[in-house]
Length: 565
Image (tube, helix red, strand yellow):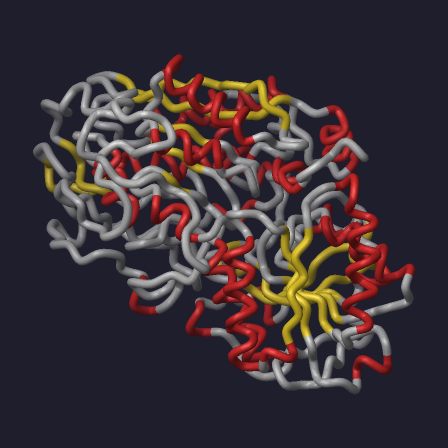
């Protein structure tokens, strides 16, 4: 364990059971394939073929380099999940709400994908003809090259993943990637093309991640395979990989909870499924202000704390892509609870010092009169932090910010259970079910396989399906700009549709919004619950039957939790 530094990414290969984060039933029969051009304000327009600009200076199209800028606050259109942002950019619909592709002739009939939970929006059926041929790097008249990336294996990390039941070996991962590709090619409208899949296991270790190495892997992928798109489904703080791919003109998916300015500055290249960091901050901040601020910390484990007005510490990893969003959250809470009731809790993601950091920080928070620990962290920080809390006989409220997989049963089981039994808050994740009930299992069987896929195969499945959605939405003349316009103007999932009597997540991209998940539910942790993820003790229970809330529909008043939480 002492060799694991900047450890945040290790748990993020967790996947299959987190099904409803990124899957849902069919969407409405509309889409938004629009004209070419720089429709959205922000970063570079993809106006020329990639690769002509030197690395580290400009992006294709002549813009300044991407990256995190400013304090992390976003401007522009309404936040996702609000009533005014669910329709995307304005465009003229035709054919009963189904828009024509960006180019080419259509039959006037809708083309809709069925058979999975993850259904891309319907598009107008293409009549065939010229698809533009080689419209961008990695695109020909017949193929679209898509790379799935995986970093070098790390023995210590893999041992932890196996212990939590979240490991998938490269051979099984590659097999599922190929199966999903085959299914997409058969069922999605790709305008005369098929997806050419390339599975790459890189040379870089995620523990610790070294930016220069990941830039090197990105450069190697761009030069060797010349892909149109790359996805990496398990990363929280290695931003250089995505930045470098964007500089090379490659559409890329991955990077959980990054400050939203990261994607804005790299447009039209960078996307992710999980809620962006600044939107997460707005959700968590508004929830805290409406539910907890100014009230006694009644769910703390210490009687003395329960009588005090809440004073919160926001605990987060201090990196370029996570700090701005965490400080955004602190500002939101300060605006309703007062600055004196908010404590900064940044830490370094370095397991060689994590135990000592947690011991020192816990003593500081306890001495400062903190009643409530709000975790906007990676999923391993609470393992250290709750152990330190228990050792110092300090039992505050443990509050989730919503993301980072802290709300995933198998990982929460690794936290000190005497502390985490006081955990509650917003959660991005939806109801967990067996892998056979979700798209990884459905595709597995549809492609003629017996038995079940690896239990952790649904995350990569959902990433590739969503990536392919952008290809369908782009229309025949596939470029990063048509891809951006098609995906960002597509309709979102119906947030109130039920499936197996559970509310689903709401997924929506939109103008200035390059990440998908767009609402939350409320949960509390029950250390005695038998988890459906692995059959072990410890799991999350949803409040209000799993109801999901957009940013402007958050409940108010103190949450009603069972005794003992």
